[in-house]
Length: 85
Image (cartoon, rainbow, N blue to C red; front, side):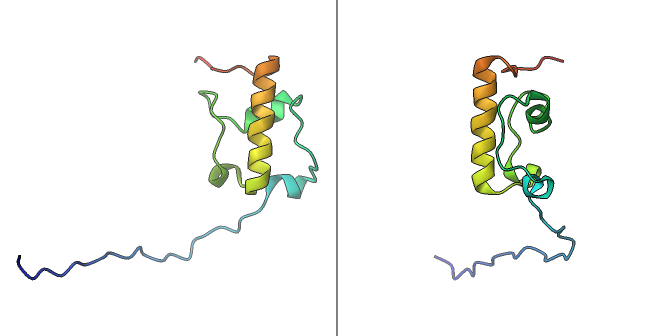
């Protein structure tokens, strides 16, 4: 085989990172309630999927609680499974 050197590209470091904050801690939430359908609807996209952590800005623990609350609300009929436009 030919003597080829492998080059790895590094990502460009840009200092435009925004300060991350937990949306629930900032507003003083202690418990994510599955009965608050309007609030849970804000954390879902138009197709009805739960938004990821990097978009919602919550901690991993609270993202799991959020997913559990959305799933409970769907089962009980507070939220729809699919949203048609």
